[in-house]
Length: 376
Image (cartoon, rainbow, N blue to C red; front, top):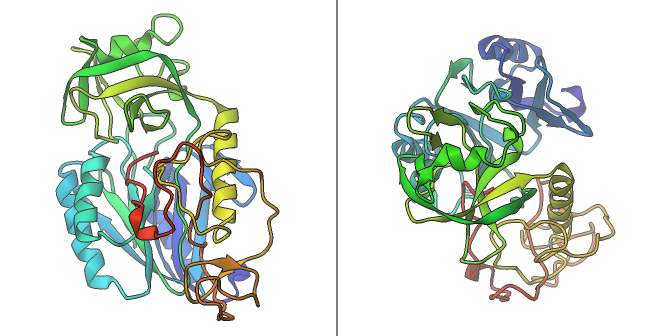
């Protein structure tokens, strides 16, 4: 905490599910005097480290000119869309003109994340929304969400970030399609009952070794369903089953947005592909401001596909006060031609070079939609 160089305003925490969230919040407040917002996790990433242990804890301290306001909505698992609308109203009451982004941490085993994000974006159409789902290290039993000493399960914790600067955001995954294209033939309320007129579980377990009986089977963590973003396209929204109803073989997908008639592929995660895709996304974010063009693709592709580019030379950069470019301190803003006033920030505005596959290449950033919430 002392490395921040200023008083801690807020703490975002990710913890192994077996830790007690109330105790964690009390200890963190005693250490730095700030409230904590966070959730249980299946793994924690910090600077240069990743840990999936059973006793791990990772925290990020917010301070300096950056401000954070935490929220906790307990009804996410029961009424996801209404929980999104309720959170939007609470955020609007606290929002200031320099709001940067909203970080959301919903339960990863219950609810309908797509419905939640739709309700949330109704009330916050112009605010970037990012985040990730709470987890319990593949136990498939219970996750928890935390804010200011209160812990719930089946809820959503959120943090509103505000201050000088701009935020870059993107999505990547490391999944590749396997097998033939399939169709969801029966689905309701997050449950997919049938794929190609067969029980959904029968279709999924056909890609696993042996005769798996539940979602704890070897290899299940690498297998998901990809819903095509466009017919015949190479980009997918990735959805992972979290619950199995054994009496009819139905699978529950908390990501939501899987409906009868959707075209899907089974997809397989690959650690090398995950690494390559994340590196490509990081490079694109690092290139922020290097080109006025923005690509219309809404999800981050794997390395070598749409919008990939040679790894750039990385140099320190910050956004100017105009908020549209990233250049080395002291250079002129390309949008105004004037030397900018440099400010601190989380990251810079995302830009992407043109590519051969995209249908839209316009410098007007308003012509391109923000990546849809819930896509991964």
